[in-house]
Length: 319
Image (cartoon, rainbow, N blue to C red; front, side, top):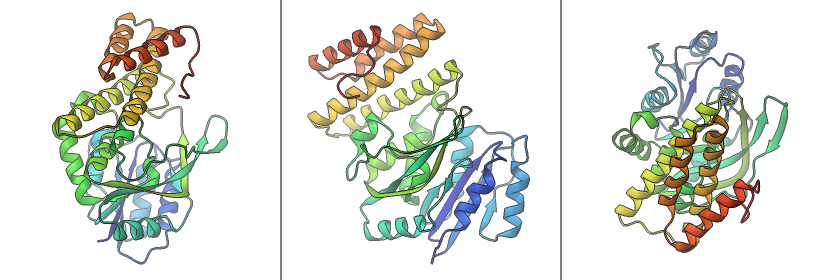
């Protein structure tokens, strides 16, 4: 099997048809399967998935289990994939380019030292009905691990990666990341893949990423939003330490990039805690930010960010 496309979905009956149609329209000349992990939702999503599985022999719907939650369902589904390469399209996103899979398979076939290839996408804001092009200012290529520490710049729907590297990534996630920080699976996956090989970038928009108020990364629930962002920061710190312990090198320029990004991300969490009047967590997060600094200049940068932030200046040093 050359390629597996895996779809994770939960209570997405409004979107799942468009997701699956975008996959099935792909122009491919190799063996390809579609593996669906439906997480015991309460709407009509599973019935739609069963309809597609009955109609298309390449579609495989995983057996119904209890509700697993976002990350465990993600890991279950990706582990069931049989292809040499794996691509992801979550149930509320969709592909618009019929050549996505063919182009990315061709890239990985020709570049054996690359663990992942990705493109870009459009963003659709459901609350306003607005489509925008995602910024391409941070589409890194080659050895990208330090940049991935600063910011998860790969949208899952735009990516394809190697199955063997992915399985190693799953092992690392299960062994290294405590379950209480399993708020997202794609970020630790991409961090591990970035350590195992290079990333390729194809400057092409492959699909549409829906920005929903109900998603874990965009929820209006400030407490859940803060918990999600805290877990992302924890994962960043964990992988940074593992990288340095294994002898990894980070350049001065990359250190500055990482520091700026982590400080910015930390202050967003601090602001959420201030709004929630959670002073203990607020100060814990602020002082924890100092762990990302590597010299006195970084400490001054953090304090400058914090002072500017307190006085309402949230944009500094181009961040």
